[in-house]
Amino acid sequence: MEKIKNIIKASIETKQKVLQNAELINTIERVVVVIVEAFLDGKRVYFCGNGGSAADAQHLAAEFSGRFYKDRKALPAEALHCNTSYLTAVANDYSFDVIYSRMIDGIGQQGDVLIGLSTSGNSANIVNVFEIAKLKKIITIGFTGESGGKMKSHCDYLINIPSTDTPRIQESHIMIGHIICQMVEEKYFHTPNP
Image 1 (cartoon, rainbow, N blue to C red):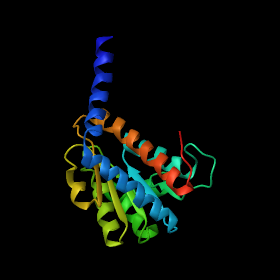
Image 2 (cartoon, rainbow, N blue to C red):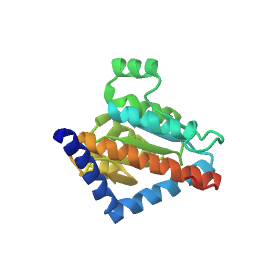
Image 3 (cartoon, rainbow, N blue to C red):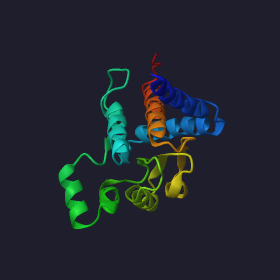
Image 4 (tube, rainbow, N blue to C red):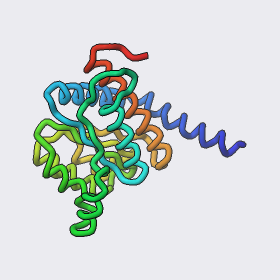
């Protein structure tokens, strides 16, 4: 029982650090504006990650393309790993490190938004896709852990959770992702959510 309480406390402590980090809160607010502007300009939002971060990427893409709080029109967002035929072919024929960069090179357009989730910030396939995104003038938003890792230098906006503990970082990523989804929905559709 004590171990369970300690894990919950650790999650709360990480979120308290996020709450007290004014720079991070300001970045989240700017990211909301950037995504709303992209949607208003007819652009798309892409998500990518590996493992649990891929699940979070898919979850957040679905919040935009499905719904968050409101019944409303779909917003153009997708997770890049959902086409398993593409993913396995490119990983097999080329390298797992280029699964996302080849796709963004093919479908990404200037002004689109690319959100990459990596707790370490060092996932080669996400670093590579951010490099391609920058060349194509796609806005890059990184969700990472404390240091930002290699992704840090490739992000237009860095949401680096003040932790080095993977589960605590991922818990904060989904919390911030939900905040962004809620606020984008409110601003884009001009209706407040609960």
